[in-house]
Image (cartoon, rainbow, N blue to C red; front, side, top):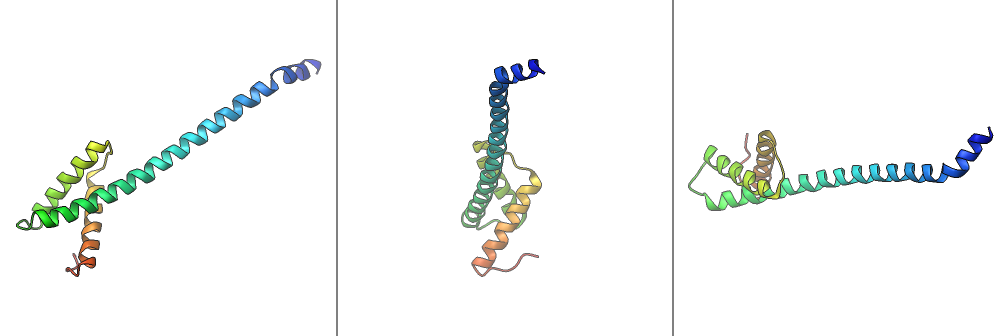
Length: 112
């Protein structure tokens, strides 16, 4: 019993500091990952909204699938430059949501 008390008195604070440092490091990593996910999601939405508006203004002679292709190309390029990965289905869903919002804001027709 004396050995345990002696060990704890000698190394207890060091062990406690190590445990607290590991916990703080883990919490920091979790917070960083959550922050990056939030920022990446917000950046994706902002880029898609910008691209949808730009394609609507720049490519007035294109319609339907051609506009969608231009928008997908622009979104992929812009997010690629920022080092943000995005799936094809995610791009399409964000574009559809942005187009729907754009149409409702400016009195366009609903897409069905």
